[in-house]
Length: 272
Image 1: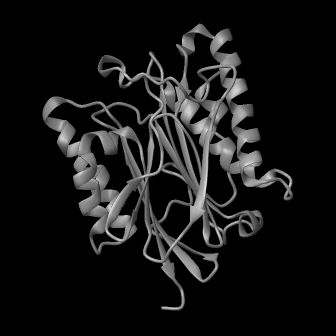
Image 2: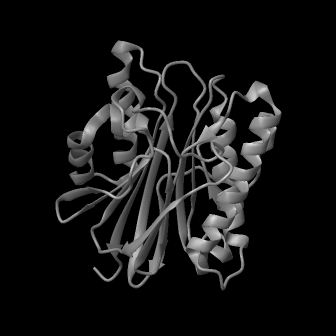
């Protein structure tokens, strides 16, 4: 498996290396709700960025108008520094194939089917190709449709929501509960032959701000900095950029190597 395996075009897809990259992204998600999205991603130091993100807005492809707007982050890892292969393959396949699943399928079924297929393929490739050194990836996804949000999550990237001045983490880290193993994933795409994905759903409210962040953001900055930035009057674009910039600045003195990626989505009432 090579880097070329993950290089798949996605109609209407925005990513850090895609031709459609622009700031910010706006769409109407239904139920008198609109969404404004900002995003930023950068490698730590001079290493290759092993994070990957993708955004599909509801007005960009016909299927998204029916199924909803999707935001996803994957943070790849391997002993050989080739985790980007797993991260990009997972995000690109998910945001391509989710919209191709049968329209009558439940959202959770569609996501599980696509991610399980990616997991199976990566797991087999890891067993066949020792040069990969076990490439795996986290995956955290938000899907917005009408007045609802849906979460799919595995690994230790995180999803937060700020509502009514309260910052809440909506996901659980799938790492081992020991201090010396707090960075070791116990669940990830490509790690095992059976993938267990956390799913959740809820209703959005005008004023909600959602954040999907790789550990290079949330672990380096902490909740107080994240809360302060999400509470600011700045646009989602500026918030995402500041989260990533501050993470890299904080890591610079000790030569940190943790890539930083942030997706910020603000829900508004189109009637106001």
